[in-house]
Structures are given as structure tokens and as C-alpha cells.
Image (cartoon, rainbow over the protein chains, first blue to last red):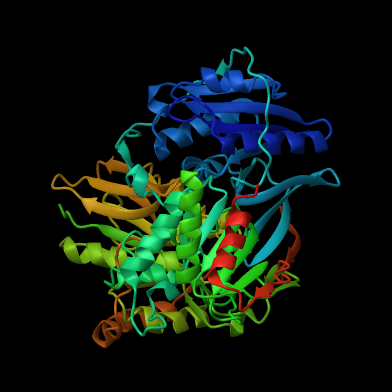
Length: 347
Length: 270
């Protein structure tokens, strides 16, 4: 009989993020497929009442909580101690958790403490023949594997955007408090804040419907034999502002900045998609001036609908990888797209 | 008392990203077709960690950098011929499987044992570096487990910047959701830092550094201890390549204005 713990941390305002509700959905789905299993919810955070109330109808037999001001900060030592305590209090054999930066940092260490095992970046959770099975990618999204484990506890960290979020009525519940024994020196680290670009300069928008991928072609000589870096920047930023798309960049474009070429100054390694970058999940993706073969194309492995604007009809990034390839000058096309978006915004 | 850092970088090797990869299943579980024939490179994010380690060791007198690497000895030797030309470090090699389907719990145990055996290691000055994820398993789990085995409670992942303060504290920027960084201040070593890209470009090859490194590192490769990795309780049901081919509609000779209207209609439709 499995005890499935869905282990969540609260956001700074005490609520649960969408990724947390996706983990609830995954855990409920697994519990539904494993007869005799029990669902338990666990919360960690500074203030957990709002989150607990939102879980009241999730079907958990128990709701456990490690709360207090020391758990407000996203910090390894306190997070690991709290997560360990909740796992032990729940008697969890399987732990399902959202793949947030906070849990990615802490939960592998918790698996070590519990002498358990951990799998991260899980994209699917199900039961086959009565045994839990997870799906995840290897070699930077280049091959997919399904695996199962018999050792317990098994911590399963689910990638955001892969499961439908659980939705339920807010109710009333009194979570069971879990005492946490904090080790000496666990507050040697303090979180002083978050560094982020100004809101109007933020180009990474994980919840956007569209990923706009800019390739190194934007920085190359154009038909007139000249490089048009500033214009490329204006077109890209203009499109992002008007469409509210998220910006991705190919490795070659991002690396230009590191090599001292300030071609697109807003493009950083955080924007990089592909083999050594991110593989974001968005419903749509538009790639412009991108070139390259398989290793880099993994950057939009998880983009559902894909289109590309490129001068090369045989480009490996687009052909066979995109649904539509427009063989055209991206400068000209994006200039006109921006004009249409601007006119639409005015109307 | 030395104020230098003892920087241990954990970094494996992975197939060159430009290689075509194909999974195969053998008696020991899944692996890559012709795995031993594929050219290998130092794991990219571990490479960034190594460059940051060498840079920090240069800045702070009395510091030293090690690279602890687990992989097939012959492949490690091939990769080290290149990596050793970049920055100064002392290699600790473990001879064992280095593929993506190995168990991170077991890898962590082997690496932690090797680190604990480093002669003269001052664990109060230890900074444990590595890539925040590998380009093979891509789990981002091994460093935390090593940290636990070494009793290190200050851990950071997705690190892009480390600045040492005048009081010896460490200011660290970690990647978090939405293209942002969390800013933390740690009192000092020991700490675990899983590096993302960092801020340093790949150093150019320096043959003199390479020769000095290889004088120490070739014997280390010869002495590489075998590391047997188990996978207790782990069963891979399937490993497969994704269906990649899409039927691409190629639109040629269409005026930019028409393309723009088509794109606009597409992006504004739910």
C-alpha cells in the first residue's frame, strides 16, 4: 500500500502556484490508479492557511504543515529540514512535488537523508500493472524514458506545464502541524531579495502563449551587405512588447554577448534555449533567423505549434521541425507584423 | 589559518552535443549506441563550474581547485587532453560508467568517497562546485546528495554569480522562475554551488597550463580507482527517441505583408 505525499511549498503571499496545483493533479491521478493507496498533502511555508484552505477538497486523508517564519525564505537548509520532517510524518512511500527552483534545490538532499531515490524533470506519472511509472527525458530532451522503482521513498519532481492543474473549492481545514528540528547553523544563509529586470524590460515570460526565438541571423550582414544590430533589437523588443511573447535565443546568438559583441544587449544566457539552455513549454513558437541542427532544435521540443521565418528553405532548425516555414526576410516580416500589432492595439 | 578555498569541482563527461544519439538496451540496462566510440566533452555546465573555480582560486591566495570526474578512463583521458589546457586543476579520476542512465544516488556516493579521501582537505574551507544539471541524466540531483554526505547545509543551484565579500561572506545569485535571480548571502564555506552558465567565457587553450596540469593529471588517470555503480530497484521500461519529423508547409515567394498577416492571425488565435 503506497502513501502518496504531495509535497508543496507556498508562495511568499501564502498561496499555491500553478505548478503546485499541477503536482496535486499528478498525485491525485496516481492515487486513482493505485488501489489501496492513500493521498496525503504536505505544506511548507511561512504562512500556510490560505494554501491549506485551497487543498481542503483535494481528497487528502491528512494535510500536514511545517510552517513558521524560518520557512518563508527559499533556503536549502531550512527547506530540506522541513521537507524531511513532513515526509517522515506522512510515512510517505511516494512523494510528488512540483519542479520549482526551491524544490529542485532541496529535495535531492532530502532523498539522501531518507535513503530514498529521486527523479526530477518528470513529465508523466502513471501506474502500469499496479506499479508507479514515470516518464522523463535524457540527454537534454533528446531521448525519453519510462522507468519505475521499487525502493522507497521515491521522490518524483514534476516539471511545470506537463500536468493539468487540480481545481477545487476552497474549504476549511486545520492542517496537522509538523515539528521541525532545525540543525545548528541552518540560518547561515539569508535571502536578501530577487534580482529581476524592470517589468518593461523583462523578456522571459513563462506563462506567455508564444515563445519568440531569435537566432544569430539577426546579427549577420543583410542583403545590403551591412549588419543591422540596433534595428534587429528594436524589432524584437517591439514585437515582445506588442505581443507579450517570451524571448528565447539560440546559443550562438547568446554567446555573442559573452564574446564582447553587444549586438542584442537584452539577450542573456537566461534566454538561451536548446542543448545547454532551457526547453520552455509554450503553446506556440515562432523562430526567426535560427540555424542549426538537432542539438539546438531541442530548445523547442515542448512547443506545440511551431512556425519559422528563415531565408534558407533547407534549414535544419525549421524543415521537419516546424509546422510552417516562411522563406522570407525576417526583418521585413517582423517590421510588418509589428505594424499590424500596433494598429490592432490602437483600434 | 589559511583563508584560501579548497574548491572541488564535480564534473562528468558527455557525448559531444553535435553527435547523433541513439539508445540501445544491453544486459546492464539502457545506454547509447556505440557509446565508447562517441567523442566526448566535459559536461558543459560542469565546465562553467571549473572555469569559475579556477578563476576564484586565482583571486584568493592559498586556494586550490580539484576536478573529480567519474567516467570510463580512456574517455576521461581523451577529454582531459583538451580541458587541461584551459585552467589549472588537479584531477581525481574514477573509472566507471558515465552515461545518463546511471543512478545519481550511487554516483554521489562514489564522488563523496573520493572527495573525503583527498589528502589534506580542509572541509571548513570547502566549496563544492559542479554543474547544476548534467547534459546526460539532466537531473540536477547529484551535488545535493554529495553535499549531504559531506554534511554541508548551505547549498545553491543554478548559480550565475559568486562574489566574496570583504568579511568572507559569499553573495550568490541563483536562477529562479521567470528569468530572475534570487540573491543570497552565505556566511562562508563550506557550501555547495551548482553552476549554471556563470559569467566567464571559455578560457583559450594555454599549452603551458596543459603541460603543468598533465604532469599531475596523467598519473591520476593511471591511478583511477574503479567505481562500480549499482541501480538497486531501478527498472527502465522503455527508452526511445521522440518522433521528430513534422510535415513542414514551406511558404515561398509570398510577400512579407501577407506572411505578416498570416502570422498575426495565427498568434492571436487561441
